Length: 181
Image 1: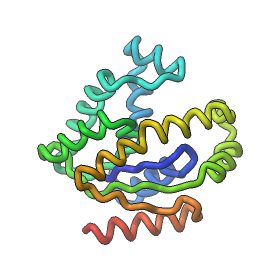
Image 2: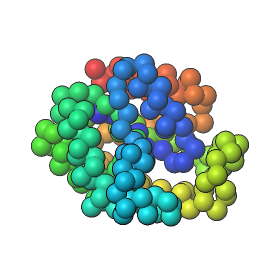
Image 3: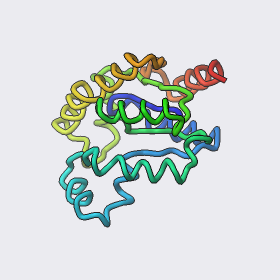
Image 4: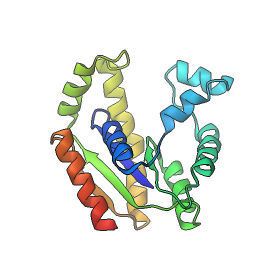
């Protein structure tokens, strides 16, 4: 498993897609898992109102996806999880218990200013400045502590500059993965 972290606009979704294509590994995105489960009224209500789906709803769905992927034996890319310390603890237990095999944790660093410029130019309906700043605050308040928790448990988080071109970021990720193989 390769876990991608990065602020909104950092290009982590792009890099996950590029890595998936190059290596033939599936990408497991928590957002995509939620969208595939909109037949669940609780999930649908939260997704449609822009709220995050809680751990009690997300973890069982991810468990099912892990089993489908054979995540204890096969490589895959995790994008959008963990989003908080509780999810980081949960993943840590799965890794230490042999249910998941961790290859790398990659953090794509990007300044908020550059992220704002990128997000403003992509034209998505949820990319107004208020929503973007809310995502930045959430990242600092929730995701950064999740990364800190993983570091405290002895995991190495490889830092890559997201200020570079997508091709340069991709090459940096490839170097990190080659060093681990």
